[in-house]
Length: 114
Length: 115
Image (cartoon, rainbow over all chains, first blue to last red; front, top):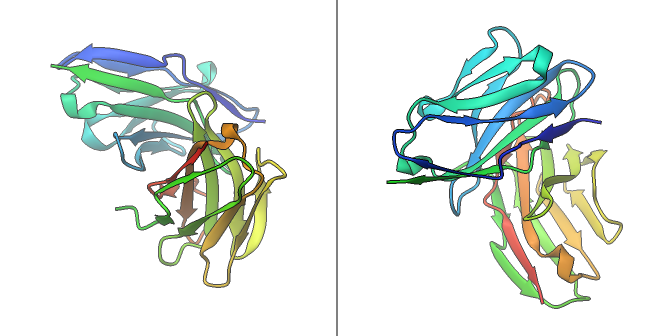
């Protein structure tokens, strides 16, 4: 069975600081990887996704993530955070082949302070 | 706006009661997923329907059931409610490929409070 670990429960950063949120997954086969964001009071939205090809994936709002297969990791990064990035971030995985539901990590809450 | 509609947005009920949560997927999407989000468990997959048929089952309790109707809307029925069922219930839908790409489009959720 697939599982996803997000090591940081709550991260607090000052504006303009760099961000890296960790995500590790457990699965024996090829996977698709996702980062979703949930702004306060809103639904989950896709930030970026990896299916194949270049392991460095760029998403919306200046976010990027790097798939490191040997480490089973898909960490999310942003060079300079803004107050509006305050949200909860979820890493998710599903099997590359077949129609399988996304398995989510427990999420990391990011608070950006001025 | 994701195009996925969930009702009601908020629901407060008592233990032992039964509630129904409703989801309308994006236009043209055949697959509907239900997730439960709680503080301690995070986002837990409950169940998936594809074009009216159950496709996958996750950590769904026997007290919970779901169905997808011919017009593709889905309902999640929660019965004999317990305090621990208080959570945010999300519906998500995905495209005509049945979710092979995995990208889900989420509704805003139904917040259930059991007192």
